[in-house]
Amino acid sequence: MKITINDVAKTAGVSASTVSRVLADSPKISEKTKKRVRKVIEELNYHPNAIAQSLANRSSKTIGLILNVEAETLVRNPFFIQAITGISEYAQEKGYNVMFAYNKSEEGDLDIAVRYVNSRCVDGIVLFTSRTNDKCIDFLTKNNFPFSVIGRPDQTEGVLWVDNDNFQATYQITNALIMKGHKKIAFIGGPKGHNVSNDRFEGFKTAMTVHGYAVDDNMTFLEGSFSEEFGSECMMKIISAAQKGQELPTAIVTSDDMQALGVLKAMRKKNISNIAVTGFNNMPISLYQNESFTSVDVNASKLGFYAAKLLIGKIEGDENLPTHYIVPTKMVEVKPFY
Image 1 (tube, rainbow, N blue to C red):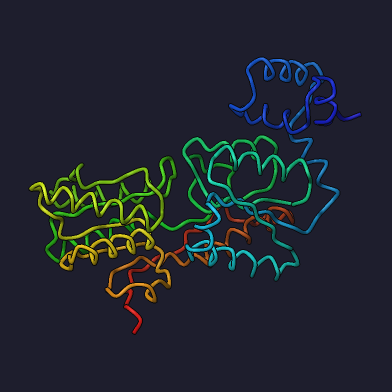
Image 2: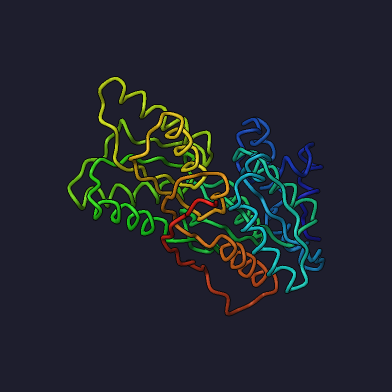
């Protein structure tokens, strides 16, 4: 008889979800409990992919989404709605339902993944975030559970993923600013540990270096959020430094249109209008601002569409499934709506 996760849980005197967290090496579980559970796993000769095998004969025709955002951000940032729309479009075409959960921490993502897997309520998962040393990816990989990722993972082998070339896109938009004569350029980045944040900063830094311009640490803001509030906060810091004698930048590269919106609002508040601003995602936010700016259209709906296509292909055993898709980007001018 095949050993199940419930057998391990019963023998170790813990819940099945605790066993899953031990397999994922969750920091929420004490070392004492981990040691006890691992000993039972070894004694019973339990193999984690038994979870996926038990799912093989039971399809829910549902895919689960894990969004690493707060509820307010989910509503306010159109990227997520557009990506979910793309996922839903392909899922509906293939006869699948979609359910989603959101939270704002990596541990929260892992807890959701554990619940999805153990409850057997979904056939596969789309992750909306790819981090350095991603625990969700490690957990799902170890359990041989179908998943795809929006965002390039650290280790691409055996992982289905879809993304833009964020390095190249940021390099191009920075290069375009330099070609227009900008030399002193500020940069506003995204969340710490997210690969998209790292790639966009590297693209910016490389463009500056290629042209022989220094990246000013005083005008480089990393480890923030893709939010209007963070954009406004960074711009106010730049303005405050200028009031103390530091030269204002002539351009600001942001990592998200919501950040760009925050920058523009702070500039308007301080009657500053001679700084070029760029964003990412080509969101329909022109209704809320009065200035034009340049954005990178990432085609979020296509990112979602292909993430669903990869996942459902995996679930249905498509032997000709590609490992990833790169969705092209393009620079666009976001015009105010009058």
